[in-house]
Length: 389
Figure 1: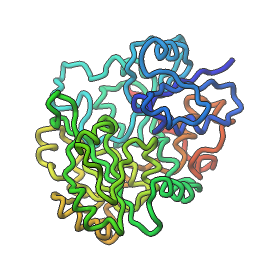
Figure 2: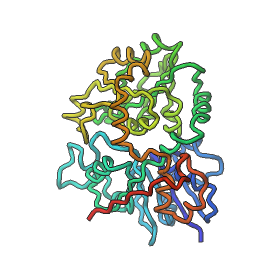
Figure 3: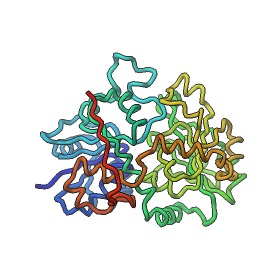
């Protein structure tokens, strides 16, 4: 009997941990049927021949209610009921630094968890390790099983094919040989809204000045949060991006951008934890640190007492650091290693295999190779399954 699997990532993209799991299963000899919830705006990111359906409406509901396994990295939007025996695997989309869901300042102790209807349907939640487990169980008031597997999406960062993939992605993005590619991936702000109350873009980095200084030596890969990826053109007012700045917000999978980049700039985004596995320089652009920490969201731990890279507060400071990101980050090398050990202990290339061993053991034995070199090694540790009372 065929096992019907339905995938969802970021409301209709072919990306993240669901993508990594799907790719590992494509060559499985087990009878599997794969269906993705896909947004028309991101249809081009799906491989040819992928079975897709809408992200909402009757077709999405029908696919979900017929599934044996549902894999999603965020809350599913349709109201649906699981079939008997269906397993809903929630991979989530990163290790939280900022407080999420029930831990957000505006959510009271007796308020329901935001997205609770979806959370109530989860059967298994993934985590990147003990630190993430503490944050995720608190944020979702989660008392069910949580598997410390690492994030499947990060296996590719440690794979034997990573150098070749880096070259291909840089070619596709038009990054010339020898240029320093800087990935700028800020998170969104709860209080940055347009006149209609929609989440809006606020870029504190002076893109024109970046271009003036570095368009001949650097390329800035601008990656907006997925909830803002359609707002950049309106933010720019039709002016377009200056030379040396490329909008990669619609690029299907950010892991490819991690490989393409030589350094990353972020603020309070979970991209920080993923990029750490590359051991490349990271710069924290914390222009609104006190407001974000004390008023807007708050953090699960004090990142800025021992940051894994330089912390800058103004655009000019950031531009100075970007002249030579490796040299600027060198004094933080020891802290970066400590950060990686504490927050990314399972970034070893074996996350996909650990997840499949839990949810599809038969398919895991017969699946194609995972992205990580350690995935087929007998030394890869099994998942730590934490069951809360």
